[in-house]
Structures are given as structure tokens and as C-alpha cells.
Image (cartoon, rainbow, N blue to C red):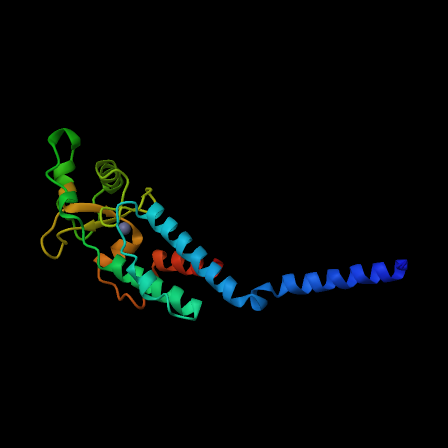
Length: 206
Ligand SMILES: [Zn+2]
């Protein structure tokens, strides 16, 4: 049988349309398959992000198994995020990381003088102190091990000014912005945390 050109062209056209339709609605048509893939992708990206951003923290991932029967993948993703975030807020500063006395040779002129609090104002050599802390603690947040740059560094006083704390380097630790909020006991519900935002972005993009 000889097929006319019209027939061949219209067949190709129909097949193309069906192909486009299936491709466009693939996530709905193969829902189950895509949901699993999305969760797997999310878990993989989440673990990668946490390992890279907080290299010294061993997160407990048992929540992944514990939620495996949850049919709604969004609910599952947000349950996992919430569990990781709770682990993050519960961290404490590792005892072996706490600073010891600063040797004399690492101090500078006026160092001791400027350690005394002066009307709640920061010491004039605050920038120098910040640099010294970053060098001392290997450019890492002392609480969560996140990599720090000068602009992303916050300084936390182990003993606050109210408690009689001074600006000696051994009373200061460099921390990331999230840890500063947690250490200063900001309301966890009302505060924006970078870790939460990043994990939610990963959930949205997987
Ligand atoms: Zn931190």
C-alpha cells in the first residue's frame, strides 16, 4: 500500500503533538515516578549542602527514613528541614574549641588598654580584633564550622558586658550570623535564618 504524503505529514504532526503533550505533562502523568525522583534529588542536594557548609557537624539523618511513608513529598521535605534546623539550633559550642589566653606576642600596643569597655562603645581596634579572631579560629564559625569572611563574621562575647565581660580575645569568638542570633536567644520563630532559607530553596528547586 502506498501512503500519501499528506498522510505521512499529518501522522508526523500528530505524533509530535502527542510527544509535546506527554513531555509537558510528564510530571502529572508519571506522578509517582517524579515524586520519588524529586525527594531523592532533594535529599542528595540537602546532604551535599550541609556537608559543604558545616563540614564539622555530623547531622543525624534518621528523619529521612522515619518519614519514608509520607505520601506528600512537600510535607516530607519540610519535616526533614524542620528536623535539621532543630538539630542546628541545639548545637553547643564545642568545649575543646573555647579560646585560651592570648599570648603576649599576639597582642599589640594598647591591646590591654582597649580591652576595657568604654561606655558601651566598641574598642577602636575592633577590626584588628576581628582579624585576629579569624586567624586564631581558622576563618570558621566557632559554633557551627561555617566558613567566615570579614563581612560575614559576627563576634560573640562569651561573658557579656552586663556580666562584667571585657574585650580580651579569649572572651570573644567569631560566629556566623545564624549562630549569633541563636546565641543571643532571638525568637527562633520570628527570626530569618540563612540555613532555613537555603534548605527551603533546595526543596523548591528539587
Ligand atoms: Zn555558625
